[in-house]
Each structure stands twice: as C-alpha cells, then as structure tokens.
Image (cartoon, rainbow, N blue to C red; front, side, top):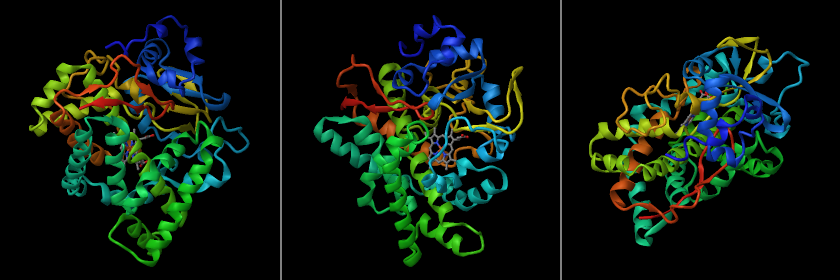
Length: 417
Ligand code: HEM
C-alpha cells in the first residue's frame, strides 16, 4: 500500500518532524509514516500547532489509551490553566463562547450531567430501530447513482446518509439539511482557521436557536423537543447548552462517518482482495461487523482526539508534559502501533480481536458509535454489492484529502459504479 509509508518522513530528524504542519492537506495525504516515526523515536513530542503554538502529541497505543482516560488531562481549558498563564493556541472568539458548553469541552460532573440527557437517544437498541430507514436511504442514494453510472462517493453518498439520519434524530426538517454540510465543515475549521469560518458558524448557531424556539412552542417527537423539555424541567439545562449539544451532534454526527465511509471505500478499492471478501460475505453480519471495525482502525476518521489540557505536570513514557499544555492523543498512530496490532499497515478485514481506539476511550467515548457502526455496516456492503466493478474515475490521480489534524477525510472521490 503505497500511501502508508511515505519515505519522506524517514529522512527527517525529530526536530524537523516537530515543525511539520500536521493540519495541512499534504500531511493528511500521508500521515501514517509520520506517526510511525514519532512512535519509534519520540513517542511524546511537542509539535507545531495552529497559530504558532505547540501541541504535545502522544503516539503509542497504551499511552494514547491512558491519556484518553486521564483525569489530569482536561477538556476545559480554563480548569486546566492557571489564571494568568497565556493559553496556547485556540482562543475561541467570544461569539462562539456558547459552544464551549458542549460535551467535548466539559469535564467531570458538568459533562456527566449533559451526557446523561442525550445518552438514551443513542443506545444500541434505539439506534437499531433506525436500521430500516438507513437501508432505505442507502438504496435510494444508490438507485440515483446507478442510473447515472458515476457519482462522487463523498458528496453523493457518504455525506448525505449520516447527515440526513442525524438530522432526523435531532428534528431538523429535511429540506434544510443541504445547507448543513457547509456549516459543519466551517465549524471543524474554527480551531485552526477562525476568521475564515466564523460567518458560517454564526449562521449555523442562528438557525439552531430558531429551531429551539420553534420546538419550545410546538414540541414534536424529536431530540430538540426532548432537550427543550429537560431545560424547562429541573435539569437546569440552558439554551446555550442545548445549542452546544445540537452543534456537536450535527458535526460529530456526520463529518466523521463520512470519512469512515469515504476513506474506508478508498482503502477497499486499493485492496481488491479485501473488497471481494466483504462483497461475498456481505450477507453475514459477523463478517460485516468485523470488517467495519478494521476500516475504523485502518482509516481512523478522528486522527487525534480533540484537545486536552494538562492541569498538572503529567509524565507519559518518561517525558514530562508541563502543566497548561495542549495535548493531542494520536488515535491514528495508536491504531497502527505494531505493539498492539500484528502487521498494522495491512488492511485485514478478518482481524480479531481489534482493540482500536477509533471511537476514543473513557468519559468522552464516542456517543454516536452505535449509529456510526450501523451506517457503515449498511452502506459499505450495499455499495460493493450494487457496484461489482466499482472503481475510481481516475485511479492514477492522487486522492483529494482535506486538511485538519483532528478529522481526516476525502474532499471528493469520483467513482464509476
Ligand atoms: C466523541 C470518533 C461518529 C457523536 C468522539 C470521540 C471520538 C469519536 C474519537 C472522542 C473524542 C475525544 O475523546 O477527544 C467518532 C468516529 C465516528 C463518530 C470515528 C464515525 C466513524 C459519531 C456520530 C455521532 C457522534 C455518528 C452522533 C451522534 C459524538 C459525541 C462525542 C463524540 C457527541 C462527545 C462525547 C463526549 O464528550 O462525551 N467521537 N465518532 N460521533 N462523538 Fe463520535
């Protein structure tokens, strides 16, 4: 697999690796060799981060897993930093402050309280009830694609499916869904490119505030109405907390799954024997389940866990990360660690056990994992079945990756069915 080991990384010193821009498109095209170098030579290493700041990246499987569970690494920057200590990076514009009330920005009891309120909507049992809808939607997207014979795997298939499903759960009217793609993408870019994305993000927040008001007046059987009822009960939920929750669910709920299906399908196109294996076993739920876990491991749609801040000096693998540092647990690296996986750069859809960290670990473990799994378990085998000769329109063109260190995904992937 030519994409896996970029020889360029082998020729760089650790100092040079540390100055690589891990948020760039070029990096997204070839990240795994970079992670391998850090894992081998500098498993806990400060690297260049947005706007001249530094992030400490942790790259070995056991250390990444421990970091994700470590209560000294806080999501809330204010909690972690001494007053007066200049915060590295981030610096979220004030108008976006409500979004700092989302699950991924909170620790401890604040976090637990909010997570409890949405947990019921995402249990495996509740999500299983969406199977039929997910199947119908998949088939109708594939009907359209098959009539045309060609589609953009991302824009025409991998993106609409999770977006429409999460919008249905939340209660966003279907006709408003198309504009959400641009909004959620702007949101993902806020940490790294705040000025360019803020306009879209404000529109997104404005739209959701109006939805909250609409459901306050006229409740329906959807998640927004449920959260509004909790706000008006004695849970002490605020409108900003509802807003932050919706933004997080809409963003986390589709940008990641798009990337699993997009990068996962690309990996299958590059490993035709594995694609055949899944195609011929696509009626066997166990084959499909194991295959999707391997696609999660191999692609790591969330490359590094979201930002954490050290509340004290924290020692990891003999290296001291100073108090107040930004820490990134490199999930993509852990998922290719030869100490945890035999032959880690090989795509092996029968791999079992598969202790990948694609959904994180600990208190912030992905709330949407059952939904993401359901979507991928339906969509990827359906695509392979319906398109026995699926191939890229231009197999020689380098795949179009998007930049961003946290979420890694393809911009587009034109395919012939
Ligand atoms: C958290 C991965 C799909 C909602 C996380 C985290 C990871 C992750 C790694 C933990 C981040 C951290 O600890 O810093 C993924 C992947 C997905 C996926 C790889 C798809 C393949 C979804 C979906 C939803 C969702 C479909 C929507 C319902 C969330 C939420 C959190 C989260 C709300 C925050 C949980 C918390 O802080 O308590 N996800 N996710 N994710 N994910 Fe996902």
